Image (cartoon, rainbow, N blue to C red):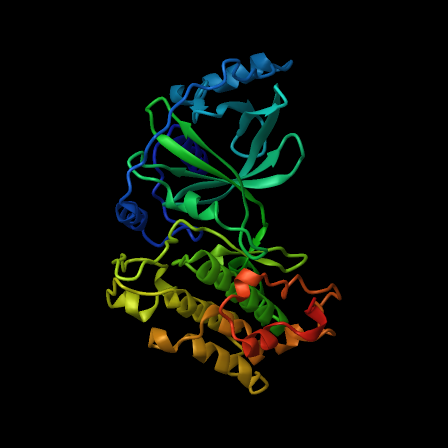
Length: 403
């Protein structure tokens, strides 16, 4: 019943400020980020396509109406729009969670040699996979392709541009979550929501580590190396190529494919392009992964705050074996290079990728414990390596991976 009330609240447009492990550690953090954005939105409104979208009625339409009557009035026949797209959200009974699911349906108009083609993309929400001060995340399925996606729904302040959307539109990397589509939705109360359609990855580093700890087992060192390396490579990309600081690195924001063990960095709700000389809020990043300069209230910081957070994550994954006599000294030395009090002494993300702790990953004989090959690790682009010395590049890319 608690979950049902929360879902109804989200569907009717009321902001959910409940904290969770997938969200930030304070509901006020997001509000401060909105103030920090400081840019007004230039809203462009246009009428939706004249024809709109016709929702097909099935044989059980009478039952659908009966179930809808039991729901709050504001949830019935809710219309969603964002100018160019016209989207209709409707409720369906007796599905996977709390007796209803949500289907997002949109039509995209294309013009090819004077002919207008329409492409319909429909998403049916199957279950809630995350809630927090940011909003709610659904696992959903594309009705046309059966592809599973994640839809992150967040309340949008009409006065500001959404920085998370702007940043995600710039990102394209094998270790960063992919933005597939986005659309805006409104309620009868004229509250605006942003819906980010993302690729779906089923696990997180947080849950993977928790499984081992619950069984009183140590996470295999190869996984610690694999996850740590891919975190650093993702940060090398967003720091060096895009110029963005994530500002919320933690195990819950590190998605993992449980079969290939490819890692993807997600949740850019706190991310920002840091400009030299411009102040930033210091109350940022989840508490246990917050760099010392943030704790002491620094407002002019660098991407080094992300590297401190990485050091905390690596130490957490090594917890229970870091004091083992058989523990490689490279693991302790690598972690200490990240957990330097002075930001200037910490490794950069690209320097971290070249550390000897990851030499095992560069060995052609190395594979996953189940015999499968490692995920792609060395397919660096010229932009990722821009500014790196030749010596650093030689350490980064093994001979067998050179083109």
